[in-house]
Image (cartoon, rainbow, N blue to C red; front, side, top):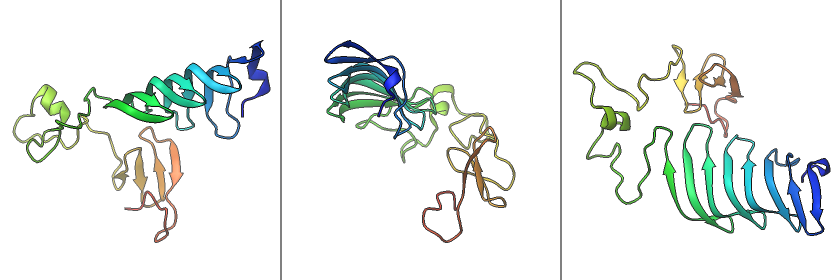
Length: 179
């Protein structure tokens, strides 16, 4: 659902969205409407801050479009009626995923991408993650991908120490931060 004040009528069949929020999903759509449906070149921002920039048809991703993820990675794809026809995923460090010739951190070559690009560290200096230098995790906490989990407070915070979520009750389902 789009706020009515976000729409301006150009002709009876075409609607243009200047700016507006999707009231029920928490998403934001910036683009054109045709017959009341999202259509044409658009920007669609999900509540997770993942952003789609590309073509829409009949309210779905359709044609050329890119998903930009909050961590800096992206997925460039050709879409048909909301489904991917073909696409390329690029990690935030520039590494592109290749479905046929993927040799990153496999049994043949265990180096991180940054080690492939910039070389190995001298003997005695280990690189434990692809990020160099690695993220700072407070003592007694655990890295959980989008932040760190503190088992004493049972809270997950992002790497800038902002609250993300409560960890839940031990032994219950849905406890995503429980290690």
